[in-house]
Image 1 (tube, rainbow, N blue to C red):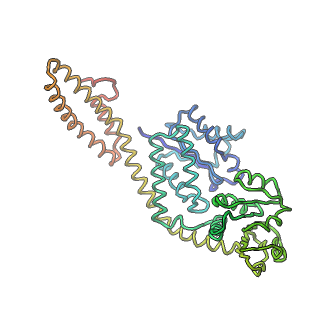
Image 2: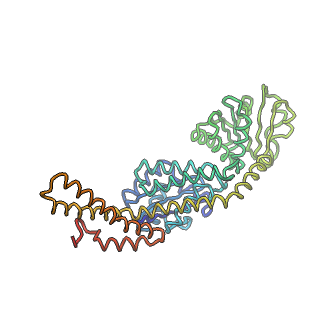
Image 3: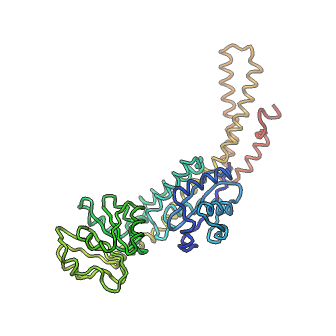
Length: 424
């Protein structure tokens, strides 16, 4: 069967954050939308990926369902005129373009931070939801496993996933490195602006850390704490919490230092205290480094590390694209084989019906030994007869002429008709 694989993509490339937030889907909404697509349109091989940077729907169907799908997204999100947002979606009608786009997204080539390591896990979760809802057939199963194999190859053979390329992730990677010998390091994040929020999302990758978050607007700290399993600290209590923290991350916008040498000198530092200043202008007094046990890193240190990594990743893009191209070629070889498999099976069934019919017609009075010999001979003959059209079909696949060859064989053997062919 020829799968008409299509995709809709709304991402940071063509939609501002205000629009991305409107159509963003949580896990419950994704499963609900999968159910509606299955019930209303009988779509198959469907994948819904929704992150902070993109919402994408991949599906197999003969028809273009872009408008209908956007309406269903609007229904899930309570948007009255969802179709008006269609201008923000990039629509892939072509099978090859949709597949290539999914590979690029899954590898991190389309990520805001190129080579983003989180995207592969997000794609796996999207695939798991489809499998749970029985919305993944042989086509999507094979496609996703090819993508996972390609991702593994990219990690093993290129520098595309080496190091941390975003400031927020580089900060968390630094914290992980410097607290590796600390049992359950206590981390306090102060300030949940754009970069602070991004750091908070990445702190979940420190499973052993005890994370607290504080913000001037306490409700935002509470929301973040609930979502990621952190502890929310009222802003007026954050200095008290600093006393016990092993790591303090400051993302507070102030014209003068928020954390001063005078404040830090009152802390009882038993071994070390790590300060990470992600504010511009800086919110931690550089003189705190004079205090024994204090380590201070600022945004410039971390940006330098992230920029070096990003350069390596950018240099590896041609390698990644070559690996993707090879994987897509292999997937299409399988896809072509899948396209001719039903015809091969029909042909085998028709020829087997002829063979059995003739055996019944001429061997009514044969004994068991005779029947066995003739049965074996005719089976061998049928295998040799069918070999030629099967070889021709597979050769036609490689020439992209499978559909024409399927049509010829179907007509010759009347494969669309139930039962035996008309000339039997």
